[in-house]
Length: 180
Image (cartoon, rainbow, N blue to C red; front, side):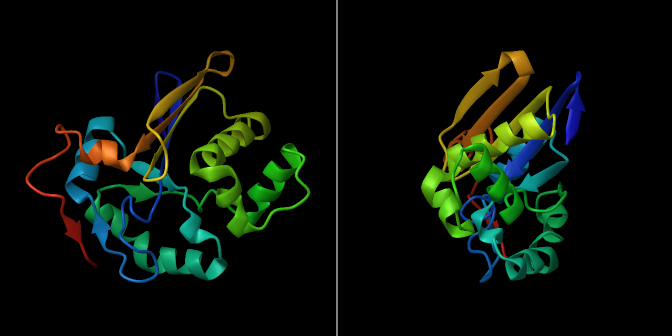
């Protein structure tokens, strides 16, 4: 989280096919050059994770042991907090949307990644009083777009990783990866 001119910036990264190749197998960081340049350009020092890969407790433990610690080494940023999407948040969103119940696995399938992120932001605005905030999600499954909630002073920006990869300002010589 970063505060600039009374606007808090919360940045979320997806994991698989965005910053790492395959979770629980190789954890090879991908798009390293482009992501480092994007991080530098946006003055990002810390991120939160918004990923389907971390549904289960064993996956979150694996993330904490193998992946989290490598973000500062590879990308120069810290991962803060726990993964945002969790069973408790899904239950609250289902209640908010008058849906009886939904399994963790069905959540992204039902809403899609973009709408899931928007629902999380809506929940944070309404129930956690996250006003004056610029939410950013970098993910391979979203469209690049901006939405502004003027009366709440909230902006939601979703960025498809391919738009970062294809941005010549973020490219150097290669689309490198780092295996740890």
